[in-house]
Figure 1 (cartoon, rainbow, N blue to C red):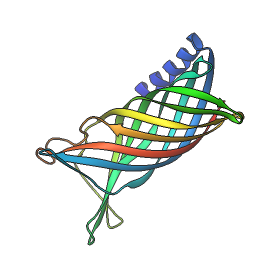
Figure 2 (cartoon, one colour):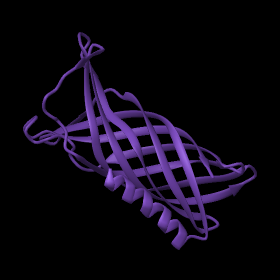
Figure 3 (tube, rainbow, N blue to C red):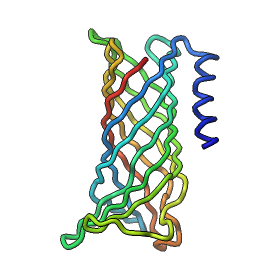
Figure 4 (cartoon, helix red, strand yellow):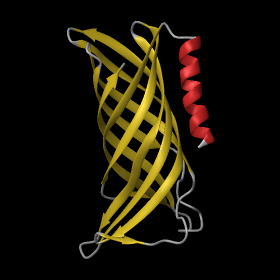
Length: 198
């Protein structure tokens, strides 16, 4: 909890220190999460798991057409597997801290933006379901940390409303080495959200 408080405090302090124009925002939406499993040079992706995200962020206007956008929020990741006989779901919730750089292009209704940047994630929980029934797992199968890059784009309207599309590509193995020998798992998340800038 202290880390979350310090992260939020840092965002607000940075906003007071620099930035040509500083705006604060919230966004929420749906995640289509997946994981890529790799072993011995081969990789496979399973079915997407539908989850959600909720983020707060600060938009620092470095120039009229460029901004830095750090944020913090929760994001559901994981995957779904359907063998035809059984359907399994793995839902892992993370606290994500992204820092994105955005290029903004003025249009009649506001701005179009494109950008990207790194993110760091800390696992908050993990849940398992088999054929819709929750399973109790005594031991964790996933590492605490996640790290990757975001690619995003969207629309920023003159009234503050935003429409966002984001693709998060995990760069590190999130599965514990003791689970499956020589197998790595990396998160992939495509998300769509609606937000508002204040």
